[in-house]
Figure (cartoon, rainbow, N blue to C red):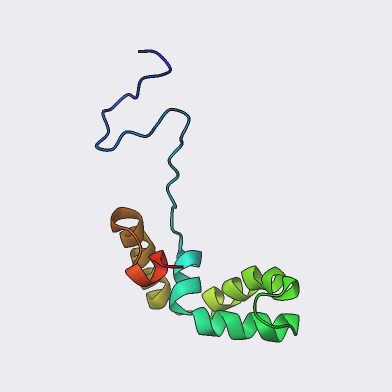
Length: 98
């Protein structure tokens, strides 16, 4: 096999030089989507800035972590299952449009 050949045939072959990227969802992605309002409000409070501003974006990962840590074990397990489902079947249509 040469470098130009794919190991498996593809249903939709890509043109030469084009790479296909696949998003892998984690529990943090699920928190950011399912608890988006809580995460956004916390990021705004912590950064004392409007959503979308550089300060807000800087505080967003910490807000996701804080919300994640506040969840029960059962809620975390549900979110892990959701991320697993999204990795297998793709995200919901509402998320694809973003």
